[in-house]
Image (cartoon, rainbow, N blue to C red; front, side, top):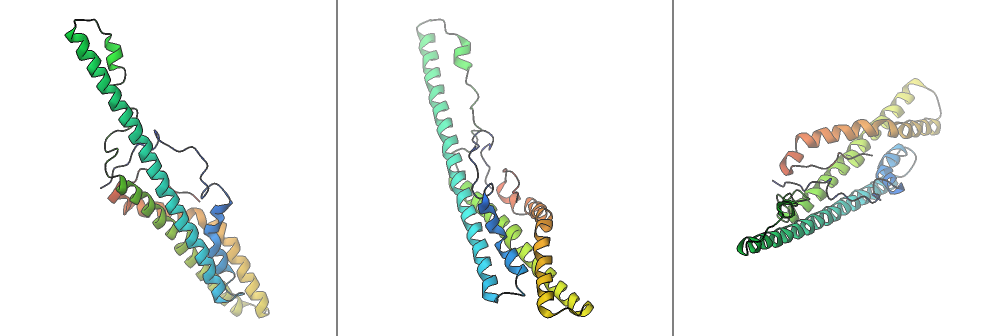
Length: 217
């Protein structure tokens, strides 16, 4: 089991290019492709899945690198703190040996490590692997598999329903189906995201003590 470093103490404040910029919309490419399935070749639909999976992989690699940077930063702080503690103990021992007065506050001023030191520097690869796996699995489910299947079935059902309930020309029915699929994308995002978070919190994240914030679209 992998225990994470306190994320608040070593948080990276920079903008996340895969969550806070236009790049995030690449994760919705396959939903758009499914919406247009009735109008475009199947190969074009599968190409949109390739775009979405490329986004998922890139985001997972980015989160792994960020976890490695946070771990390295925490380890640096812990090492510096331990060095300071050794110097303070050495100074205290010298003061006792020479019968000099030493200010207790100067010795005990940094008894608490500024980062959560337990496990810092241990299981480094495990933390990075957990960050990559968590992001990849979450994105693959919440951004690709589940919404793609949902839009696929919604569009197929809409096209079938229109064929039974209307006498519209086939091209019109296909365009209406596409419009229904596109309109559904912003509606299904939040419920799917929350459901995947709950699913992973109840299963995989228990294996590696996930302590990060829940993903968001």
